[in-house]
Image: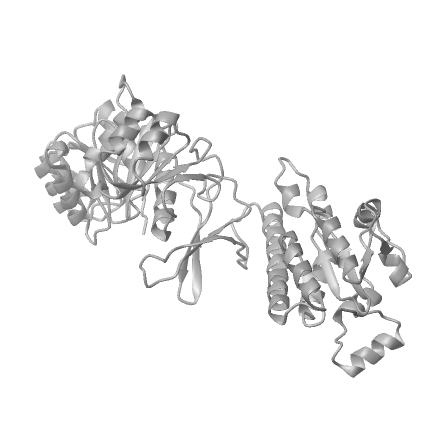
Length: 524
């Protein structure tokens, strides 16, 4: 096949594979235009190029800040070949049509990911010409092939070898990818500058989101719904996409949602071996291992499981220490969907893999909350709700004792444990605990007394001698009466109800103790 000579403008920061791509373009009759480091890189590899300033008649200036911003470049990209006035003006001004633009951008995101990067260094990595070239080529996608992803090099060359041009459908896909890329790049810059220029406010007047698809889910929450998982490229903390899936079938939409919830809980207890079991985004049980136990993780798992064995069926397990063989053997005695841990012993992996459908997730690092908490966003019709997610420190020394009887040191410690768990339970909610282990969880009820009844029913005999943390105040004494009936001895709640005195009087009548934490812990 014969075809006219064509121009390809190539300017890339990431040069992986660009020499092979340009060699293939040469073979298909393209002349390569380039500049700076890309020009030298290609010439050193025997690929003939023309410098951009040879086309424009104007040199690079301002330390390379201006090199492609010229009418002979942008006219060559934006000129429509199907419009006679465009063609005539291009001829009048000696503008040669550019048929392919291959550009990737200055590494702004890699730069800002470094510790203590200066504002000046970051700003120098804001690309100006690159996004302009990409957008121009994408706008004129019918006449210009725009290439922003090295993963597309092979498919583009394959189609060019089969015909003079790409199929229009592929040109459209490349143009869409180009606009998504420049949008993402601008969002990364604006987000970083927002934090630098206004670090005193959590967000500006306009919200820009940038997420990249990791996978399609088999379906959403239900089989009739579609679902997908997207990642935030700037996030460096614990996440599903940065973990290894060692075993089991693919993760579902609900699995990923619950994995996020279970890691949130075990991050609350970095100093002790802890296990949490999640069911439908609420914990069925959370426990810290007993002192002196042979296998601390096995003990923590057993205690968490025994909080509510019925609800734990088919749940998601989170471990904040390595999973050993004894823990794996105990897990395999029951049915679970997923287990998440920072690491696994070889023996535990062999044991867990006996369950062919159990998903085994390894985070490859401690499950710690080392990054600033992300904002929480919730989509509503026609808009978005957003809130900060930093929590006040759970400091039992600052709690106010409001009852005649003071809680014991052990009760305060258990209420501190329960308060760390309660903020991860859907409201209205209460959590009963004893010996640093949940014994009853009342979640998602419309009234607090129903949450207390549910927690007491779940706890059974274990409610006797337990403590309780409530995510919000008790509006009536009926909740306290229900707790007294099952044997709860001490209660932590924010306080602030107009009936606080009535509630405190009920506590005193039952010989219980109560503290006001003055912090509400709703999770809707």
